[in-house]
Image (tube, rainbow, N blue to C red):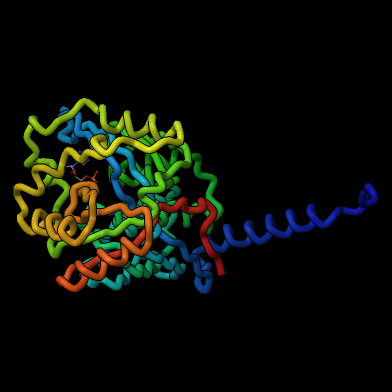
Length: 329
Ligand code: C5P
């Protein structure tokens, strides 16, 4: 036990971290934190299920969907600037503008706080965009989490959730990631038990050479493709009980329409099946397809076959982001 009137090392470290945090915050408030850098990863997701329950009066669709983050990720670097502006520099030139969800996330936080701190966003894009993998939404959630930590903001979970939901239906899911059942328009997130079927240990993602607009896919969806949420409920119950969901419940209500309307996606699905995948499913509104494998050797064999046909392919796995995974220099 340390003597009573001498602070122990834990106290000293706590005091040190508080003074560093205070210094960081006052710098941020004075728009003088240039030189400090904040790195964060933004992970992609796949939809194990996606039930579309119906169309809502606000134009959105009521959903029940089971999502899981995977280790394919973008890397974001935030730097403070002195010019009170938000700049985006992205490895995908078409995304180097302030419509980018990452820039809109910075603006949300600045507006919420009434601050005008300038921020440069460098976005190293690895998740294909407009692909059904949630890349833009994940970037936005990562920026919200990064700013909260970097600027030591007293934002409640409710504040963060409402900012996330106003940026996009999938953004709240990415605040925690992992495995979750998402309902409403996608923003009501219920985490599920950490169970991932061994038959899905490796995930091969194939991105056909087209981009799809989520809005267009939902707009074209006939009511005959609506379901009552049975698939997502069955999969959630199975995973929560640490058991494997039945294959028939790996259902995506957007898949039939996408395969019918976009022959490139239907062809890619056939090619993946012919290359040896036994299960192939659309992620979100597509066009990315994923095929699960129990063993790496089988996944790689199929990967090589479809790569030889010219497809863009990623080998990935389910992952749980660490919420404190923000690197400050
Ligand atoms: O919410 P987010 O901006 O990501 O959605 C993009 C578009 O996808 C929406 O404008 C809407 O047309 C469609 N959408 C929908 N129902 C949802 C989510 C998205 O109709 N639950």
